[in-house]
Length: 81
Image 1 (cartoon, helix red, strand yellow):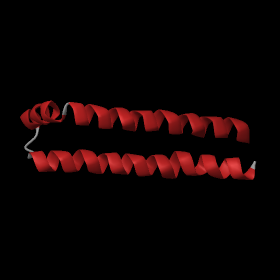
Image 2 (cartoon, rainbow, N blue to C red):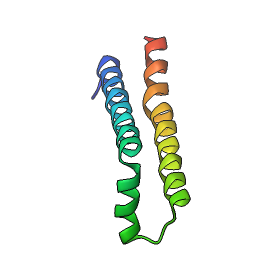
Image 3 (spheres, rainbow, N blue to C red):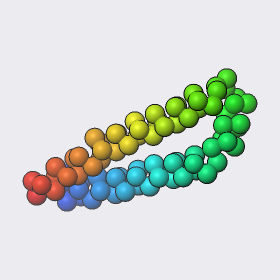
């Protein structure tokens, strides 16, 4: 069974790792947007606007998930401990 300190550490590291992944995703997409679009266009019938909307929408969902499932419980545990 996990105690509160272990759970805090787990949620803290999950927040750091997931935020790092989100930043990496943004940097790669910003740096290689056209190359990634051409690569995906070969596999899927998608236009440039749809490609951008898909990625930025997915990044927004991922960021929201980080806040809801990692950061908020971490802060709540820090407040009660």
